[in-house]
Image (tube, rainbow, N blue to C red; front, side, top):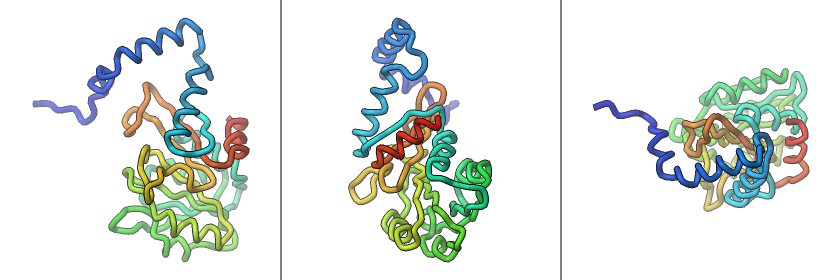
Length: 212
């Protein structure tokens, strides 16, 4: 028996009627880019996460790139990232001219080791990209404390963590910004590709939107 790893058609069938209605509305309005459905999604996703703002984007990589640009990453700036993650986490730093500093992960959680992160902070370090890998949040308290003490920003890579919680609060609003992916294989996927950036600083999230 051939059992597919991911049966997207089975997922679609459960909400087929709602999807058909949405498609008809989009076609009738010809709102193919940045239409009212996007605004509705941004508002609903922000509310579900319990954050102040959300901007929808083309994909998760765009979400990371635009977040880094909004945070002011400059060529030569060091950014600490986990050594174990999807390649885009490090790729975007290099793409913008930053220096990728790989950090070891905790063997139990597979997320950033706070102790190893602190050991790798230098005078050129400007921020940390923490990944909530496989839906398991990184040690939010430890990294936030480190960022406050060392004057660093924290960007959450939440591409695999839709609905994940840290001490009863959904991820996506702990760092200055959080980057999301809605690639079809994600635990909250879309038809095609999609991404978003969320945060509690409305002006900063709006800056991301203006860059996009």
